[in-house]
Length: 228
Image (cartoon, rainbow, N blue to C red; front, side):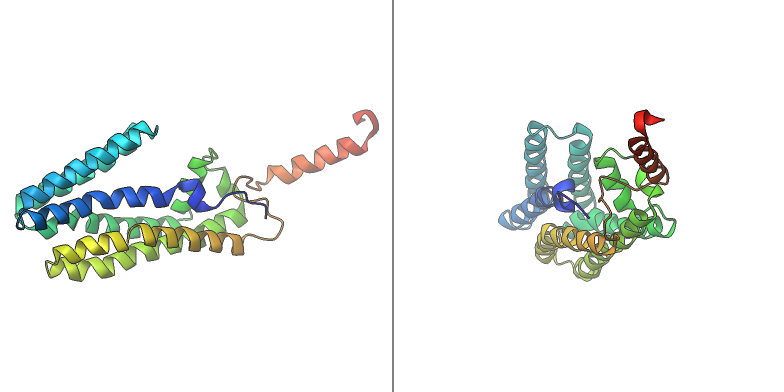
């Protein structure tokens, strides 16, 4: 299989994951420095989110994706301010991981693995990859790695949230974001490479049913003088 780039290079997941941890770190730092003030923590988190958003926009990222990230931080801050519980800043993240684990698992079961949809969208293939049985199978198997990623987060976050461990939640957010995403990208890429059959041209070249016929027609044309 010829493959010029990895999933990490295609999806740029590590950098995005690092950016996502900054507002959470800002919340914990502001909360601690100001004597466990939720207002201070929320303010620092929003400032960090705005700074990250401006930096992303200047790098040419899509405004919609940037605004969604900023909105998520603002909603998390509002939840904590509303309830008066600092640990509730991480509630949205907890719910998001539970929903993501369910969505990824369902997508595999119905044979529309989300990893294929994401990579296919990045490569401009839309859903053409689904017509390649080998690629569909590999995306499905690799998507289970992403399900496991969200389950691991839930297993760590839930006890800490229930115990109200704000600092530990902040540390876990960092430890289980960019390092876990990097590991997930590496392992899912390994799964894809191991499960695609030998000779498969890779993610950029789905082998749909019409491709072999087209290749055979081109070969017959080359073998026939003057194309006759």
